[in-house]
Image (cartoon, rainbow, N blue to C red; front, side, top):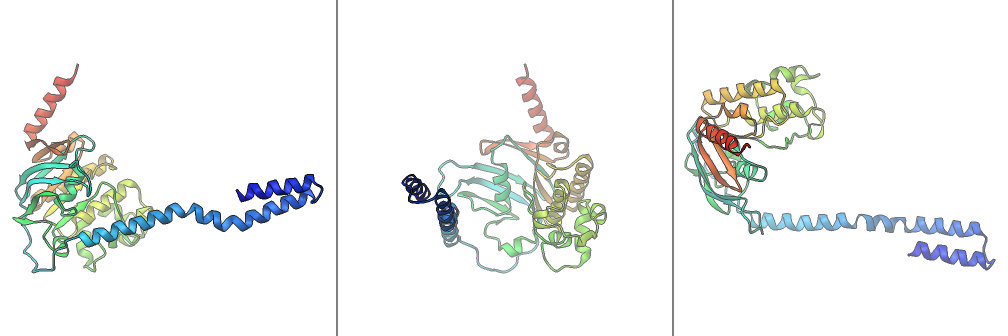
Length: 316
């Protein structure tokens, strides 16, 4: 409004022969420079309001969090996973994302988790590792409620590969070891278990290669395989992998299959979200989710046969 007003006033003065046209342009430029800080403040106002609102939500979340107190470290679990009537909804939401999910896995079994988009698979994966607090039900690891397990202690026994690989600025060795001070042999063992040791050694500085912010120096497949090595670091008992083969080629998927075979031999309990039928045949059990609930659950051969018959019946 001020810029329009100054131009209008300058034009009127020029028409009245009170001012030269150049003075009108000069006045407009001076006004633009004077208003520049105000325009920048207005442009960033939305971000400032968003930051203030986010701070309020974060402060409220921290106030409402009931984190378990530090207690006696528990012995390493065997990997017996039991989910009982698990229900979850977003804070303030009314529609549950998970509805009465129940299943049980003995130590050493591999379960495939499948279902359509927005069926609740990723939310269930986060609930299995105690990352979210369910509204109802419980996830038990060797009989212990996983949300009540002290996080520093639980982290040693759980490996998680999220769908969006989050690597941090640092070396490959630091990312695999979760930025802990451990002997190099443990890092190499995790990389070999994930079948990524040769890939790392082919990089310019090997395990000391700086991967950059969020792993930007690596391809999607390389980030996924290094993320898998991080999930397997420390020989965890429970491993949850959210679409670990989404960015892998055939060689990468073969490496993943070998890693799953090693986990089965070691007795680790593994939950794997995938949509590829090739890797589903390698599972011990399959859980099919639909609209946040369990649609099918059982041995992989039986579930794959049911899914195959369903698709054949739906075909024209």
